[in-house]
Image 1 (cartoon, helix red, strand yellow):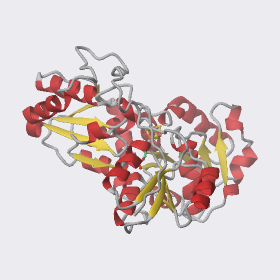
Image 2 (cartoon, helix red, strand yellow):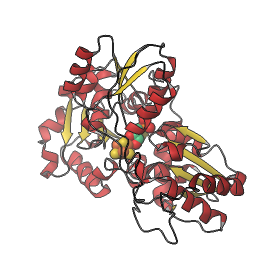
Image 3 (cartoon, helix red, strand yellow):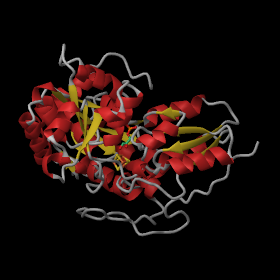
Image 4 (cartoon, protein in one colour):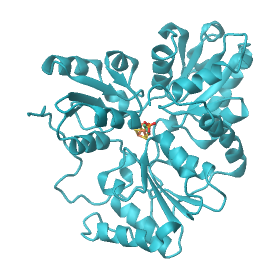
Length: 392
Ligand code: 13P
Ligand code: SF4
């Protein structure tokens, strides 16, 4: 059986690039060229035994994911974080907002480590607390604040989650956004509730329109760089969804034109995308869902089926390797790694683990107690949601 052959260009493959240091690491960061990195990581993990629990997001590099005790999407990892209360150290191979959530969801005694502090998320950085508080005040000025429930995507900083917890809202992930939004709508019985959706406009719009029966015209976009979000009080009053103007720089790259091209080149191809993709792309897709959903869909797909996947490239490459009986292509003409996810590499993991063996907790992620208390309210509301999304 022949497979569709679109070239993938794995970053740095076959070359010995210097390790990218990200932020300063106290002590010696092993060079990426060290041939003993795998052994060193294995030895450090073994020495730590049950004291360490390593979580790995699906977008992590293969070199890192091989050491994860559990892998998952943001929702699964949020649940899994609390699954090993005896582990003293939680090493989070993912990005900063995920490590913050792990700190919030684990006990006081447990310490969360992010192997490179430069592993942030450009989307999470698009909503700052001050900006969100200004928007909230503007909703009060427009006379609608009482109708609005704030909902934040997991991909946001802990203080934005805390804001939602304080103001009657909750957190959602890409695998439960529809259920979370139904919960939020039900918080204002008897009236047409409104949602302030932070910070990913695409996940908000895709869920509102494709899952909840609203229209694109029910949504407005709040631009934090413009006065009053660039919206009139009348526009705010008429809207059901107020979408924060944020996006994922990785998923924002996929285009409807490439979907058309691939359909023409490969009749019968299935287009499978993450809901952080634009609405245009999602409208043209056959299936939309979280990273966990994408993996399960490919696992269940029949041999010989053809798939184009619109999500981060580490995951798409892994799916290609794990499923040689299926044709899997990437839904972009160019390389599309998440640069911040990629910052967690083997040298940083070895550095973090060996420091733990030596009794030094490096790169600890610690959310301040007030923020933690309110963010936990918003996270717990999500974890308590009934059932699961129809996506999973
Ligand atoms: P999920 O893990 O929820 O699928 O989200 C993808 C993502 O962009 C994480 O940063
Ligand atoms: Fe952030 Fe997008 Fe990277 Fe996820 S893939 S960490 S949303 S930039």
